[in-house]
Image (cartoon, rainbow, N blue to C red; front, side):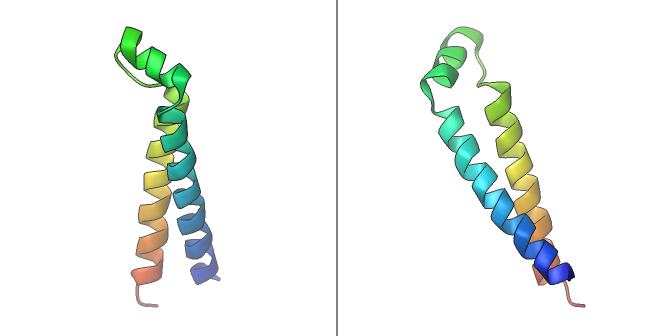
Length: 65
């Protein structure tokens, strides 16, 4: 059961990283970066959440039970 949750977290994290990266490089985010100095909040939250999910999922898979 724990292995299944870890795999699901890993997959969800990779998807969040992918979509966060796409959002970060979108036209709207590029305009935010040009005028505001930072990317869109949604993109940053997806990137941070994806990284956290990948770390938690990966550590769950590597942990000996």
